[in-house]
Image 1 (tube, rainbow, N blue to C red):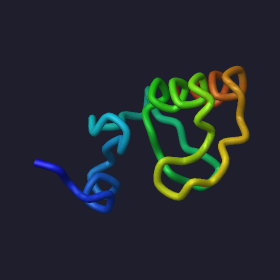
Image 2 (cartoon, rainbow, N blue to C red):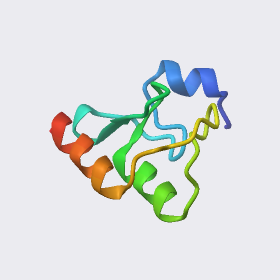
Image 3 (cartoon, one colour):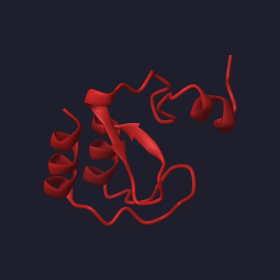
Image 4 (cartoon, rainbow, N blue to C red):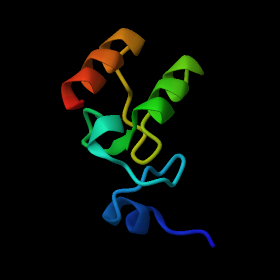
Length: 73
């Protein structure tokens, strides 16, 4: 069953993979939307550098994302 964006956000689920987001694998983008770190890294690697929810540009590169991830571990 498909769920709406608001349902996924309310439940702290990654909108990309629909799995629960935990602190150890969390990335919060500049637009304040939360995702799994692996999901966002895959997006950036594919050159899709926009937030899936609001389409705000992801300015961080892979190295910066990895530093951000280390802060939450």
